[in-house]
Length: 66
Image: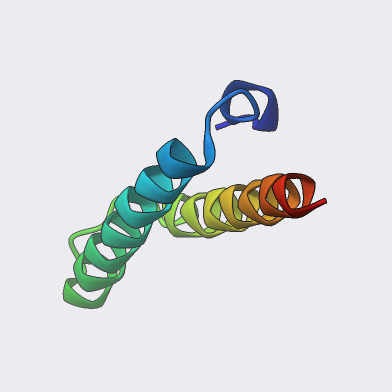
């Protein structure tokens, strides 16, 4: 996921995306522990996506409060 693709989304959409990413990360960690995960780098990628979304949420909330 690129930041340009999520930058145009609203705060509510970003919060929904955050929830979806957290669920995906949980499932990936579970599959990693079981040994079923084929692509270990996906865990790292999802973690970075979560940080991107949280950063955008913070930026947008600061803009709204000003």
